[in-house]
Image 1 (cartoon, rainbow, N blue to C red):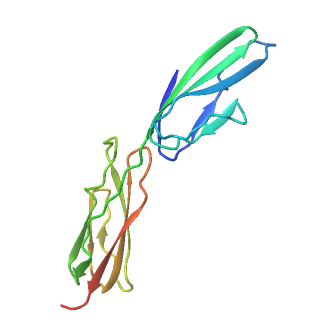
Image 2: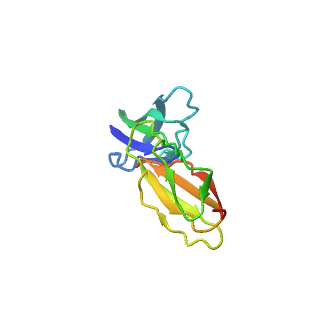
Image 3: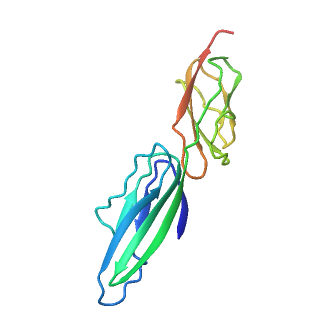
Length: 178
């Protein structure tokens, strides 16, 4: 038996290289999908039964059985994997900000279906002339200093240790008026 957790949209690599086959005997491998989440369209039909990859299509529990026939003997091994859902990134930031002031972006509403701890990756695109003073960090909140008029684009991606979210962005407009 083998168990693993993989991230959503990741490949599950399966190999029979550790199978024991007595010298001089031929081997026939067969694969069967025993369990998949409701709504999954995954099928098992490997072109190469010795080494292949599956791409589970939705989060949840999957079970596959490997059958190995050598001569008159038949053995089975069950492979289980849990596909961890990708986290969801959410940015809360003001649409406008005052010139020469700090502006905070908050990702604390981001979530993960399995409640795994999240890590945050912030990126910022600043208008021409901005010095780009920002507290990137890996925390749920980040801060920038609006030192130039124009549009600031803040991008957030969150990771849960297995997969990462789709990046989300917030646009903050800074006007030079006092």
